Image (cartoon, rainbow, N blue to C red; front, side, top):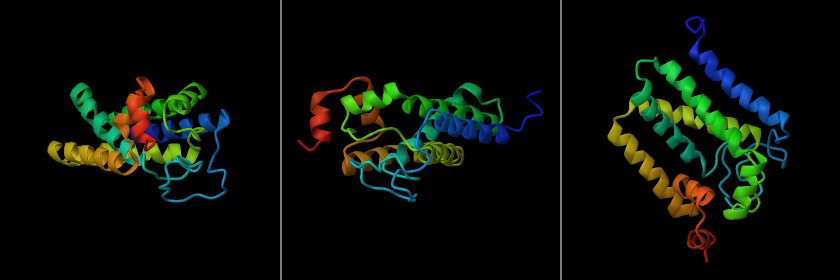
Length: 186
C-alpha cells in the first residue's frame, strides 16, 4: 500500500489536515485585521504570527535543518520524499500542540507574548512550508553551511527581537525571570 502512495501527496495531505484541524478548533484563518501581509515585523503586536512570515519564520527553517539531520541519521534508507513526509508530520504536530489552548496560555503567562492568541491558519501553513524550505536547504547545502545558517538565524533574531528558537523553547519549558526581563527591555 505504501508503495502506491506518493510521499509528496502525503506531505500535502498532512499540511491540509493540519490547516483543517486548526479551522475546526476555531483558529482564525487569516489575521483579524482582514488582510494578509507577506511580512509582519512587529513582534509585540496582535498581528504577530498572523501573516505569512514574521521574525519566527527563521526558527521554522531551523526546524527543517534539524529534522533533515535527525532523519538522515535515523531513516536515511527512506527516500527523501518519505523523510520529508515524516518531517512534515512532526512539524504539523508541533504546530497543533503550539496552537492548543494550554500552550497558548503558557506562552502568555511565562513569555513576553502577552497578546499571543495563537497563530492564524495561514501563518501555520507558512510555518510548515518554511520547515519544508529548511529541509530542502539542508539536503542541498554542506553541513557546515547549514550549521552556520542556523546559528546566524538565531543570532540575528536574538539581536533584533530578543527572541528566537532557543529562547522560545527555554522560556516555554523553563522560564527565567532574568531572561523575561531582558526580553522586555528591562
